[in-house]
Image 1 (cartoon, rainbow, N blue to C red):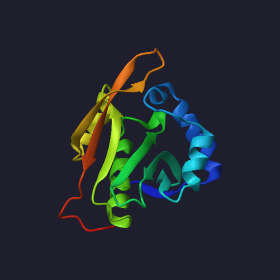
Image 2 (cartoon, helix red, strand yellow):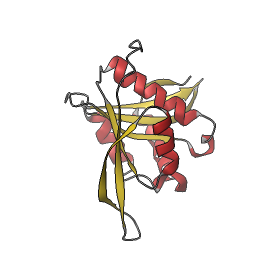
Image 3 (cartoon, one colour):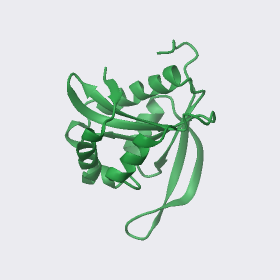
Length: 162
């Protein structure tokens, strides 16, 4: 199981390199150190790094912690060379435990580009369901527009808060 720790400013160069990876950047909106610095400074967001032993393997950002409308999984990234080994699933499970257990969320939601089949399959396999589709919501680099799928998950009624 992966552990989560608070992100620090010293982590930002590594995290922005992970985002710049061609296999990651295509799925993200705004990136960069300023985006992360804003998330770190915002009391309505929690920015965490996933560690396996001592090694950082990914990160996630939760938002909407103060609003009571559910917690958004705003961003989740696993280091490129480590994909395909279960770390994304481990990170997602750790973040859900954090959202439901520590933050008391009654639901966690996210949006994902409709054609990001790998991410959607992961989310579905971990209990996320389709909430709605936002047609043409994202402008792509090539001038086209992509749909966003909004997915949500409720806590497992048999789970014990972490």
